[in-house]
Structures are given as structure tokens and as C-alpha cells.
Length: 446
Image 1 (cartoon, rainbow, N blue to C red):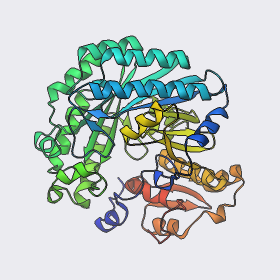
Image 2 (image 1 turned 180 degrees about the horizontal axis):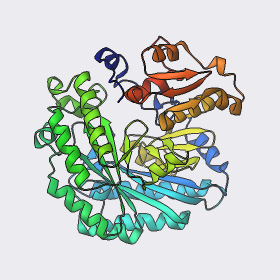
Image 3 (image 1 turned 90 degrees about the horizontal axis):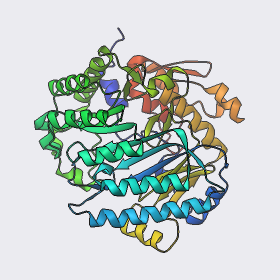
Image 4 (image 1 turned 135 degrees about the horizontal axis):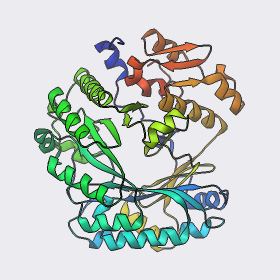
């Protein structure tokens, strides 16, 4: 049984302010110098036979969750949603006209917001358009995020018709005290009903999102939520730590800072959830995911195909992601692009017949090698830095920093001739290990 890290080490490396390294360089490095013209050029240069992924952002909810860190709009009416979907369909047309031919699609993800609040007929119309503009592979995976509070049987019918096979269900916590403190009240019965309905309609893979570090959350509260989640047997769980950044997200100002657990309590909450899930037969994946042995993530980890992208951990090996909708991020051959996050501005660009790319990043050769090392660490908890550098034509001496020595001295990792392996008890500090290879962060020792 590995020794638990000391409170001092937890405080040193358990910083919520570190990047999550879903992509590298991180979005903070994006620049307005990369705009619509660059995006058009990169789209035209995509390899015509390489499979791609599509991400569609539906930024609407019926109510605001106070913990949420994503751009979303609250609406009780469908008019705003319908107008946005009209713009989204037009963007799909604009993008499809730029690519060299009908690109093959292996993965589609609808994120939000709460994409399942769109009218079912509109969802089916959107899927018909996508299938008409792109060449869907027979085994293409279609996934969608689901809010159990607003999920309807009509939408479940539409998901079945569209061939959706995976759904991510927002749970966060089953504790009614915590739910009230984050303005997301939903019963265990609602979640169970959503899961049952999804499975009856052919959505065979279910993900749950759980959180720790929420206001008024206790250790027992986390235990209860994990036990209830396991009883519903989702195929995969993502367990996220709440990041309180009220200066960035105004809705988080409604959360009582005094009610938030401290760093030591957060670490204990994360650990107890992990213990319950592992004891129930889930495999721990990377930093914060858990999957049953037959889930795609577990199989990808076993075979070395696990990837890290803007959505988190994925078995999707596509090099290209086309992001559609306001604030959506895409990964094209030469870099990253992001659409205008403000819906009104996004709508204006699309209505004028131009792409809504507002910023992005052109990757350098050094970015590529650093990104590969960070992805190996985040996915596999180890990285052969010399081997990766050789593959990219770089000298590992230029990338190995004093931060790694400090991390080793603090019991987070072992390093042998440039081969880095993060210890199990150091998993909580995985972002700090990745940060040692981030050339854009402050270079002071962690």
C-alpha cells in the first residue's frame, strides 16, 4: 500500500490553477492572429482520406449551475436555440465547402451546455445534414451530453434513430445539500430514469460525471455519491475537482467560498471516491477517469492508444477535430482554432457567410515534442523523453528541467536516464509533472 503524500506536498502540487493539459499549448496561448482565413487554409490542406472527429457545441441550459466553467446561455424558450441551430447548420455548410472532399468521420460529440434540450426534430435534422456533408464510417461513434433533469422520451427516440451509442450524464453529486449549494438539484430517481431510458433506446455506453471539492461537500457525501453511482453501473466515470475561479466565471460568485473544502479535504475526497470505484471493478485511467475493463478507454490504455484531447481522455485516434458552434475548438493539421465564444458575434460572422474563427495557435516543432511528452504523461503516467525527442529530432537535454528533480525528491515520480514514471501515490500531482514540460508557464520551480 503506497504511502499517502503529506499535507505539505498536497498543498504544493495540488494547485487547481495549473492547466488540465487537454491540449498543448493551452488555450491561454491562442492569438487573434489566427483567424478565419488561416482556418480556411488549414481546412483546405487536410488529408482527404484521413478520418476526422466532429465536435458540436450547443451552449444552452434551462438553468445555471453555479460551479460551471463553460460558456453557456440560460433560456426557457426555444427561439434562441432555433436561431443558433440555423447558424450552426450554415457553419457546417461553410466548413464542408472548404475541405478537399467529403471527409470520413469516425467520431461525433455533442457538448454543451445541455445539447439534449434542443427539439428532437432539430437534432435529427442536424444529424441528417452532417451525414450529407461528411462520409460517416459504419462504425462511427456518436456521443452526446445529457442533463437528466430535462431529458425526455422524445429525445431518447431521436437519439436511437440517429444511432447515438454513448451518453455522458451529468451527476456531480447525489447529496441534496451539495446540490442546493451549486444550484443543481436532481434526484437519484431522475438519474436512474435517464440511464434506464438511454439503455432501452440503444445508447449502450453510459458515462457519469462526478465532482469533489464542491461547497458543503463532506467525505461521507462523496462516499454516498460514489456508492450510488456504482449501483447504476455506468461504463465510465470522470471525477473532477471543482476549480473556483469567480474572477473568470461570474456564476461561481454565487458559491460560498467559506463552504469549500480545503486542499487536504479535497485530496481525501478524491482518494475515497477512487478507492470505491476501483474496489467496484473500475480501472483508473490517467488523472481523473475510471472505466470498466471492456470500456473503450480501458482497452485504449491497455493497447497504448489512449489519447488526450480538448474533451479529456479519449480512445479517438483522429489527428483532426473540426469544432462547430460558438467557442468550439478544432485541431487542424497545422494548429488549433477556436470559434468566437460570444453567440451574437458568432451568429453575425456565420450570417455574413464567413467562418467564425476568432483565435488559434500555429504549432511549432518544439510544441509538437512537448505536446507528445505531456500526452504520454497524462495518459500513461510515464514518458520515455529521450525516445520521444529522437522521434521529433530534438535533444532531450533541452527539455529536462530542474523541476523534475524537485518532483522526484518530493516522491512524485522516478526518473532514470530521462525515462519518467509517476508513482501511484503521486498521481494527484500529474498536472504538475506535465507542467515541467510547459515552456509557456513561469519557469520558477514548482
